[in-house]
Figure 1 (cartoon, rainbow, N blue to C red):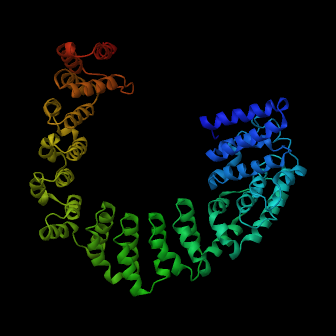
Figure 2: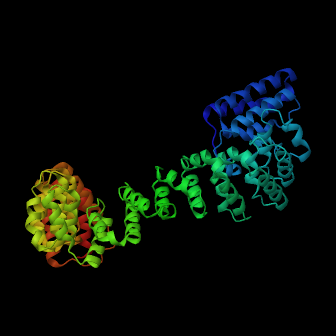
Figure 3: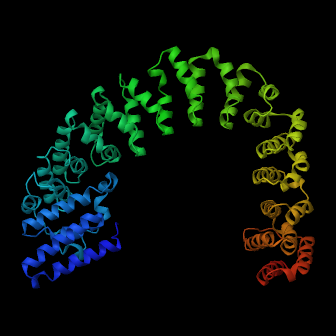
Length: 542
């Protein structure tokens, strides 16, 4: 529900006081004050004040009514299409404080007088406000009067009323909208696309024909500017639905729709059009278009372009997949590896080795080798561990872990002290998968003397992964002997470990003795809370 700002609330309170005490004020004072306050609400554009403005719909002063219409028009135009769709949910129209029952007591016979003449400013917006009334008679009369207008201001309200729960209202609104789906109204329809496309998600009535006719109108050559505007819409749902619905329709419009959409900043729009390139291109131009899409910054588009090239140009597939082996994304490299192995029966790692001979700093080739290498590449990865760039050291760690598994832990563990957090994370990931190959003392040493706080805290996390009873003695040692930052983190881990009631294993006698010994040595350096937690855990198991 929309809330009034402090400034608007003060104006609304003044309006309420004027209306409540109006009987005691001279007529010549009440109406000017009311108009002045309404103008203030319009000036600040506070749309949450609409229910309060509705309080003055019964005014008998024509000048006040004109001011009221202008205010309603100003406030409603500030609503986004999405807010207009959910208009009745944004305000508490039933509140007596707001409307004093005037809104609820409105009758169809009063609508025309309140809305004024067709040429009066705000006429359509006052009628539009009435289309959200809870009375079907009021809504129906508002729709009937709106149907007489044809300047575009009536269209959003008629579009929404197409889904009214009262059949005759919906039918009349649908008929009025149907008459407006033409080239003369294409600009107004384009401005209401968010509402029009929303109709497809509604189930009370079938609006597919309305949506389809509007899309057909946009796809016409004469409305090309509006089509491009829709594709470039700032509303994600609008541009994606317009393109998707346009692609589903066969016709010459595809030769304009697809090129426009391929220039979109929206990756999903480009992806959908990439899948349809064969509909507008011959072999030569299709190959060139797909080559361009293989360089797109969005990985699924590049993957789709590679797939289509392999499908439409099988003679070039082998070379294409070898090219894809050097893509920057691991998913495409993995797909390319699969095709290279199964179609040309070649070893991708050999291709990566050759690529590195030509360009030793190729990041894609290094990543590819770490994903496909074998034991013969271990020495290369060990040399890469000393590279000056963290990205290369990460690749070396990943390659060693994949090829060497547990044997690699001894090689990568020293780099848990690396100055780069990314390298430390890569080592941590490799160590976790082979934790049985790591000794407690090595992790404690890093936690106590690592070069950076990140490195030390990572070692603490690894210690915690050893298991509740095995990790507690080590964590107590770190908490009592490490620097302040690491000690604080270790105590947090101890607190979390001792509070974990999902560990159902019983500590061995050796575990209990080691924990008790570590606690005795660390007691003076720990907070009383931590000491109490550990002692409680020991007592639980006698």
